[in-house]
Length: 170
Image 1 (cartoon, rainbow, N blue to C red):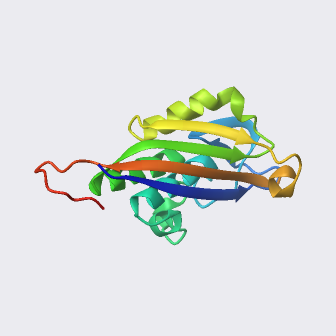
Image 2 (cartoon, one colour):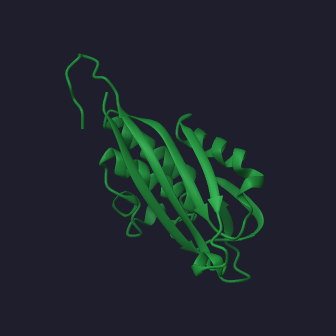
């Protein structure tokens, strides 16, 4: 069995004050929090995880799979995107080992819903192990100024043994 790792990054700016955009983060809606701009739902955690999984699988990146040139992706949820990446990995003969996501933001407070985020993202990925952590930047940079959210992710994917015993590693 071959193990492959990938790294993913995603960044989105907050929507303008007074916007009706809902904050979606970690496949959860965050009522009362300022929403994020994006072609899809702007779920930075899910997008970073997708990028890491696609990288690990050698399947491209967020832009090549879910590009803004695809009108059908307008408003797509992070959960839908994760499920699609899971399907692509499965078709490539790969299984998810785990995904770790680090969010960098001042708000929302990730720890209060960490377990829910992990469960929601795991469900979208067919039960794969997902961990979520968070950090602030002590007021530095665009995240420190409260202008947006950044997400970084790593992923491990494993090749599934071929059914006939032949080596089909990617």
